[in-house]
Length: 273
Image (cartoon, rainbow, N blue to C red):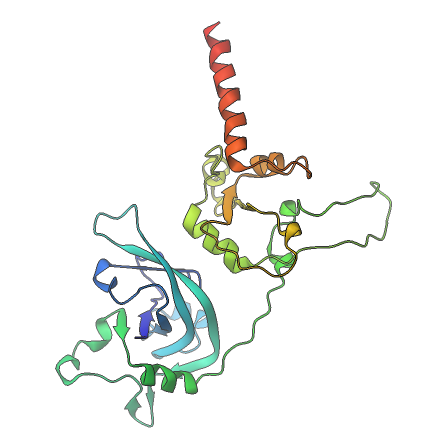
């Protein structure tokens, strides 16, 4: 059955619209992989968020599907994360009431507390009825504007410095949603050397990390499904550069770790001597 998932303007939960949903274990049986969901926002409490919402009143603002669910390793209460897939926002808010009638079916014994639940099961007919009032937003991301240019390792660039030239080449489309999901899964530390940009450089570098395709996208013969959990990994800029240093002999992350381990062992022996 489909479900409604509430996303609050201010919350202790680590939600990221269209990327991940953070929730308590009491909703684990509802939010399983493949579940269709409607995004919902309740009544606005803080006017500072008015420009970030489609409406100040309670409303639905998008549809998506639940992807893989995994435990929140930092929680002692059994909280979980769900990856969000196929998120499509609405062009405008769909109100919870139309012609004075709620679009969701509220049981008589839950009239007083129904809206308190952050996750609510709904019938497929209710899901379809709410969607029928929505205009889905058509989005085309220009990945080349959103992804840091320092990560364009898979494109060979030939030229001279200082001279204006015209270069004809191939650039490969990347998905910012996949990048965000990879970071949500793998974290912001380099998976080869554990470097953390924020710890090293402070708030200026918060959230910065490179996302590496384990199979270079330049080898894709056509569009391919990419699983951020198994096909992507987070690396610091140095490690990412070393992986791609020799285009014909890309290093695996394990090989990179081996190089680092060998250097650390050598350094330790040097200190002993």
